[in-house]
Image 1 (cartoon, rainbow, N blue to C red):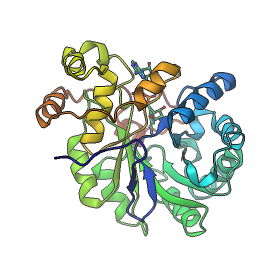
Image 2 (spheres, protein in one colour):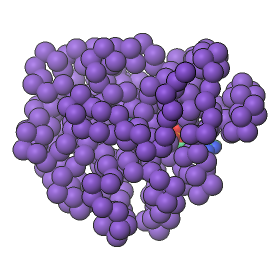
Image 3 (cartoon, helix red, strand yellow):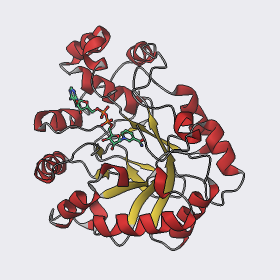
Amino acid sequence: MMEKLSFNDTIQLNNGVKMPRHGFGVYKLADENRFRTSLEVAAEAGYRLFDTAMFYHNEAYLGNFLASSGMKREDYFVTTKVWNTDQGYDNTLRAFETSLKKLQLDQLDLYLVHWPKQEPFFDTWRALERLYDQGLIRAIGVSNFEAHHLERLMTEANVLPAVDQVETHPHFSNRLLHRYLEELHIAHQAWSPLGRGPLLTSEPLLQEIGDKYGKTPAQVVLRWHLQNNVAIIPKSETPERIRENASIYDFALTGQEIRAIDRLNRGERVSNAPDVIYVRTEPDFQ
Ligand code: NAD
């Protein structure tokens, strides 16, 4: 019998910090009024982890929202990320200061290297380690790091990343990386946990399983992540969907259903492969 999951669950990171397992992603929420409305609905629905990035250009919106939300600081968890063109030791320190100001925080919960870059590679991580040692960040981690990037990082790192936030959904289940992360006690957090939408209508299996429980394909997919020990940060601007994506704690998939969804894997990404960004020298990102 599997342990009962709940929306308030946290996972303990490898440095002891507790991170909500189910958060809210804010990529592409570009208009401040719409941002605020979505965040109000999300907070009301119970979301307490908010995932932004310098690259999303909405850290200031999140800061404004949190400052006026009435939520106590210890009750929410904020993640942001250092962007590719800000990598390097001094640049990262500067970028962090800017992010912290925009977020109106004294201390960040989780800071991630957004993408691995071949050069500079270690300098960026050293800056994160310094900020962590100074107590300005509660946990440091990476995003879009595959096993070989982590292997390289570990040749010089003093602090092991606490989290690897990577693309993960039924068409790109990333199970091999998951097992590797589990061995290292690095938490696996899925970005684009819904595959950005299309797979929800193109895979009849998800609808079939959903019908059995009175749930939507999106709810089935999010529940599949949780039962596979993967943390999630789904994004939506639509109030009903924000609430729908939170309402996944009143049913459980069987082992057979989980394996059937596992078999939908096609190794098909919705965005760039990390190694494309890793070796790219021009500053722009597509
Ligand atoms: P997602 O898989 O969360 O999909 C979001 C889209 O799916 C929505 O825009 C909407 O079109 C659709 N959707 C959402 N809920 C739905 C529902 N209930 N029913 C039907 N359709 C629904 O994709 P995402 O926004 O790319 O990823 C989530 C978060 O992950 C982002 O907001 C961001 O915080 C983070 N992220 C990180 C990286 C990275 O490089 N670290 C990259 C991409 C995203």
